Figure 1 (tube, rainbow, N blue to C red):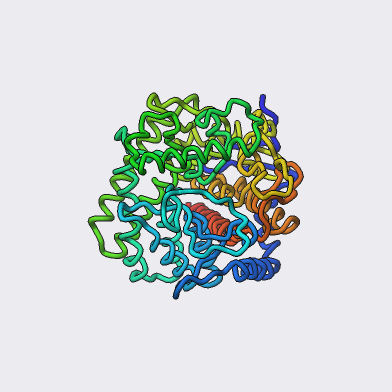
Figure 2 (spheres, helix red, strand yellow; figure 1 turned 90 degrees about the horizontal axis):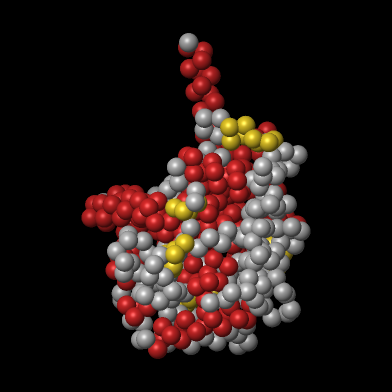
Length: 465
């Protein structure tokens, strides 16, 4: 039997666990006073990372490491900024979409201003002031958060054509097999640049290979794409065409949210198309990714499954694709297993049982010589996992991850990622993704409120009988 950090009591809707590390509902207000100072700390990081381009502004993920605008980073930034400065959140996204290509693709990097001492590697993308690849379709998620705060339908109408154009791009150019899934052509498009999920795709057989070898393999894909004049049909049958679980889980949720946004904006055409596509993506994920009780990414013309155990296995919960039984299986056998993902600081991006697991990386002074996505905890992945757990009623597990994330920030500061065994921070300093802790807190508060309402309704119903 797997070794667990908890003892489980399965109820109809929730998995309730007991542990000395568990923070109960009664202690939910434990951080309320500290949260105001935490918000001030986040604001200080975001203010220091603020950059101007014309009349608009953007936020660099880290001034000393990532001095440009990144696609999904800006979406994370807008979500965080919705708690701090909602107008700045809007401007972050407005500037982002100015870099959108005519075919609808949003590049994953915009080089608005080149710093004097640029720490970022020079990459020959073949494009002017942007990269030639994309990242997960997060735009509608950020717009939705802003709409939740402001009710600003005009801003929704402003962003909706950009969201819709990007979604159409994905199905027109990234679904050559007509699977109703979007493929990625470079691991960087997943947002998890050197994740071991893509080792086989890159032809890297040694799970402990050096970061520089991984980096060179990904650069070759950039060079190949540029040499092919960005004609993707020449890449379809190559093994590095991947249908990735997290990318498509985000796409499914993005389409669902876009449909809702379009309804609020009075655009029934986009609403109906997005809703229909969301259902098709979910159905295809269930049909194509499901393998041996898990959902696994596939690659190449034969759609081979990638069995490497990473945090990606929890993303079907985020998209609402998994059945209740499938959700229970992955939570009990992986999330709560100390031999897999239940480490002192959760949730690692790679299972402890994987040969590629590297909790901290080979840090030698150069920013890019690090493990990145081969084991450490990232705030963005915890943010996704929490939402998936709450969606399936695993509120206590979600709270545990939230409080663990808060402790990492409290003790190690705003770092790019964290060692899941020691809690030590690694990678970039003054890294912005820690700001997602504000949204995690809001998600947990909403879950607590739902729990209380359900409890009150049960008591009222019991009193009537």
